[in-house]
Figure 1 (tube, rainbow, N blue to C red):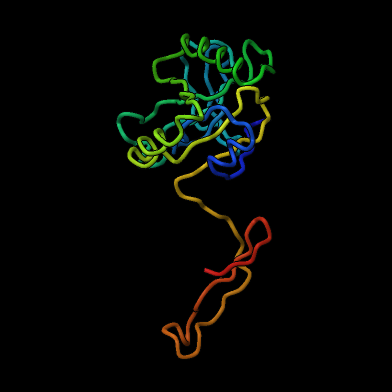
Figure 2 (figure 1 turned 180 degrees about the vertical axis):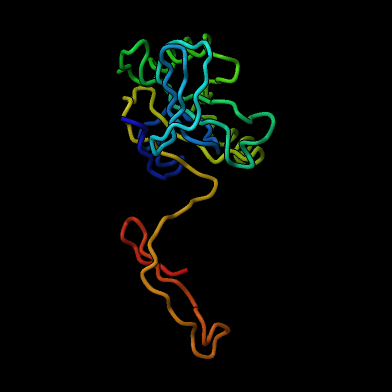
Length: 201
């Protein structure tokens, strides 16, 4: 398991699914950090290493967001920090505990890591509206990720993003309407989304 799977949803979906906590969604590079024999290698979601450091950390595998790449991540308050939200292994042993147990262990491990490693804060689901307004709307976080404290490591998580991005394949280039402002040139693109829906842009 490299990373969790996500499904887009809302606070209502999260409550219906029994989620009892959530975290802010950072706009950086998702990465897996493997610390072994005195070095830490950071891997992207495509499994490519993009950074190796030589710092004092416990032997472990962590999952988080490395603050690089985006304008938001380059803010001096965040730039080059590593915000960690899960732990996969410690001392070569896979961590199979429910999320609440993994998170408690994660905080102990991060206390022994360099100052640039930060735990991602967990919030109670009851505080969603306040945190959404303050952190997502006012401070530019990407959104939130909802969790259950009992989630296994491979749980599918619900995320609510400030802006939704859809991926699709262009299936046709359609001409502009006769008599319309795009007559004689491209009018729109027909696009098939990942779920099979056909739409036009």
